[in-house]
Amino acid sequence: MPLPLIALFIAAFAFGTTEFVIAGVLPNVAEGLGVSIPTAGYLVTGYALGIAIGGPLLTIVTGRVPRRTLLIWLAVIFTAGQVACALAPGFAEMLFLRVAVAVAHGVYFGAAMVVA
Image (cartoon, rainbow, N blue to C red; front, side, top):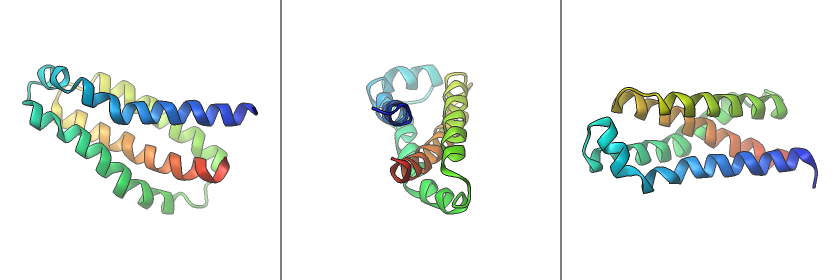
């Protein structure tokens, strides 16, 4: 299997894991951020909205960027966003960062489908 295709698979796994893993640790996240579990659930909702709304919009905006360059930058944004989420001091910051990572996720999958 070609190395670029393996890289796409690994990144897709990372993005997918990021989307769903929070559901299993939501009580811990809520406790750590000092909010209720239903309020922490907005982190899941925000991520879904970021993919569904922000992803297609940013895909249109980045239409002229070479796909390889775009995928690399999206991976960098994703990684930086994940580190920032881990260090987020409060719920609002975490929600903002999750939505930003979700937008990158939405664009990544659109671009990756074209490249693959």
